[in-house]
Length: 309
Image 1 (cartoon, rainbow, N blue to C red):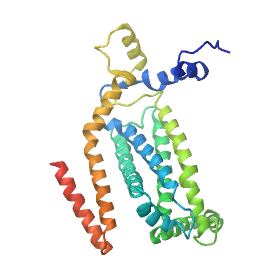
Image 2: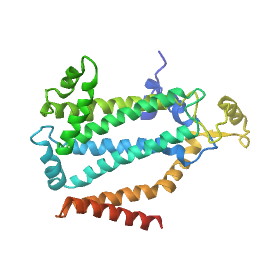
Image 3: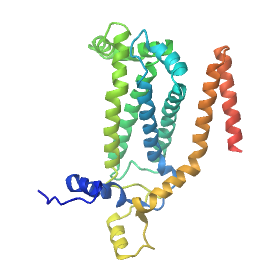
Image 4: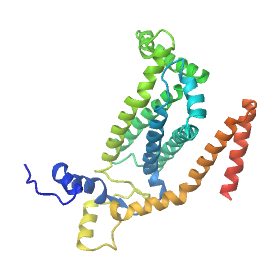
């Protein structure tokens, strides 16, 4: 066992027992990033931020949601949206982040396809990313069911019926998923468990695998150039920094990624917040649902044009 000395601070105490400094160096401060990249390489960081928003807002919603077929609808549309202070805000934050996360996933996916980031030893990055996409889709569907309105109910009926097409065991699989012969209270509680426990844990583990799979092949660049990162590190140690084709993530890339995010996505964030506020205002007004939807689309277009100009 390694010698345990008196620690000067909490960080040193943890490092002697868990090797945290080495872990941070391996995954962050001494991780090399190519210089020839743009703001599109920040999509992963944005996705991680949006997932954090979903977790935090989901915890607040979980405090008041009732996973019961008779109480779920009222707990969402009356308790959370009307009675709980700022409940409407947390719900719209959760819904908007869930929508935006798929927009960013598609951008992230097509960037990988366009720049060939799935080739030349990066197959595990692509495979883990696609598994994450499937699990996120399941998470979104299970969350869509929780308000337990008409759309939620019939979506559950249609999607679970798809498993009935499996030869020989289809009917048994459908009954097992639903917990009943028909979509009922047992179906809601099962999908509630998936949404708040099982699938989030799977997502967290897969995110860890996805980031770890970047460690050996490293991040791709715009030209698809093969960079010898060990040689880059050797040049850096020798002080030959002018000829480097990459830089250390911890020292240089964090500020750059932040600037890319602030410059390129502040508009998107502002648009999302504006849309969220408009949705809440219109949801509190009385009137035909179709008219409200048209007003939302119109106001979204106006806000988009105003911010774009």
